[in-house]
Amino acid sequence: MIPLLTALEQLAPHDHLCSIYESPEERLAVAVPFIRIGLDRSEKCIYIADDGTEAVVRDAMYAGGIDVERAIATDSLVLQNKEAAYLKHGSFDPQWMFTFWADATADAMRQGFSALRAAGETEWVVRGGAPGLERWIEYESRLAHTLARHHCLALCQYNRRLFPAEVVLDVLRTHPTVVYRGVVCRNMYYVPPDELLGDNQTARGVERLLTTIREREEIEYVLRRQRNELQLSEERWRSVFENSAIGIVLADPSGKFIEANRAFEELVGYTTEELRSLTYVDITHSEDILRGAEVIEQLVSGSKREVQLEKRYRHKDGEYIWVRATGTMIRWRDGSPRYLLGLVEDVTDRKNAEQELDASVNQLHALARRVMHEQDDERRRIAQMLHEATAQDLAALKMHLARLSRTASYLSETDRAALIESILLAEQSITEIRTLSYLLHPPFLDDIGLLSALRWYVAGFADRSGITVNLELPEGFARLPRDTETALFRIVQESLLNIHRHSESETARIRLRRAAGTLVLEVEDWGRGIPKASLKQITSGGGVVGVGIAGMSERIERLGGCLELTSSDCGATGTTVRVRLPLGQEER
Image 1: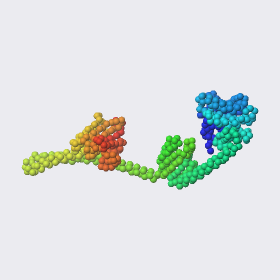
Image 2: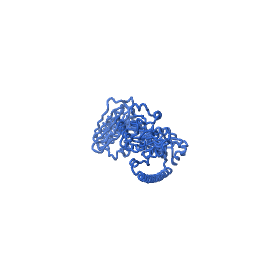
Image 3: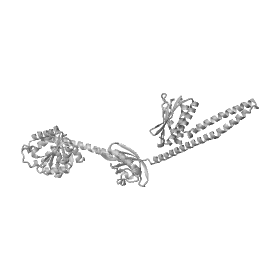
Image 4: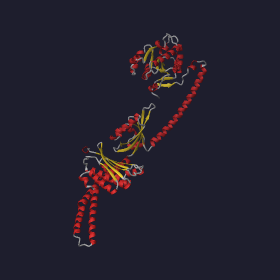
């Protein structure tokens, strides 16, 4: 059953309805909201009061939220008595009344109102005394046709206790819509004026009754079939609801539980009766409440039809479980929220596995960082040992061999040749040991800084590889922390090595710059590039090149930066390794 106010709001111009009441309170309970709705819709409203009832009507309108004086002042509301409307010429004339309603509607439209809405009291009719009232039912019957031609709707009010039953019966026959005991009804006993006022009414009445009987049976048949289908649908829904392995829960828009299936009860440990005294907030982890409120608001507002989130529920035993909840809003016909339907799955095992995996990954990252740090320290130690011990020993050996060569006249030609070759081998070993020491860890990197180490390394790389390298370094570049300089140097080292091995590029460019509090390092080539199919595997650590790139990424992430790899195998666009590293306040 549609609530009275909702039903009255569904009325529109051209409607002709009667209100059958048994007390003044019942009459005003329909008339006041009928007028208020019209005023809210910018319609002009006319209320025709009986003798001595205007003050009562005013008070009821005030109590019903209508600013009567303001509405009258703006001509939105007109309160009239029967003499000013029905009996303006001293008698009741239906034809003049039809003209009255047509002119009143036209005036309202000219004034800018959207329609004319009228409500009239009729108790004065039963008291009689005015000529023409014998045509009252004729007037009511033909009024529906007049309203259909004009932008107007009318409410006629009849006191059932006052009017004779035969008059009430005629009233019912002349109004397509009836309001009785707070219910607005489509009147299946309405008789069109051509039938009610025409000839051969008995035969027409028989035809109408038979038609009504047939239509009623058809309607009842359809209702029975719909009721059976609804019952079957409810049974299917109940079966799915009760036997689903996934938790299903129904709540009101505020989140208070209404119904839950067995799977949900087992999930949270509460019975449905216990849940009905709780809301979702009562069993939600405190850290997840705000997010839950946000997604419910999205459903209530209609900004989303469906939402999904993972959250923690507190089981009745106090333990927390992880769930994945999918929610949707079931609405009334007018679109307002009715029920919140949730599908809830237990994902605790998956969440625990993810957390364990995350912990393992973090441990691996920490181990990788320690390995790289120890590897750098070992390289530094080996480089220092080669430079300060092995290279010095070889230099001393060369000096001894040179001294022998000055006194080697007594040696045979073969021995002298062997001595000269030994001196050359010593010189070559010294050069290779020093080169290896510098490649492992250039002393410039610790002593003078990153820029000098890059200049030295790029010059040596160009000589060894034949690749022309353009080096763009900023002026006045201050020293960076040792770990940062080491990481950047190793990235340049690894990038140039990859260019030499894989790109077939004849040139490369290294660019170091500051940009908005960030240090940017770019190593670029114009070689054959990396196929798209391989790029994802490489950046994730797959393949020979990928291992080096993954190591570079690990180095820079440890310092709070990021590494980007862009490449194309179309044309000569080549590959670019780009590092972005945030600078501290003192480094900017």
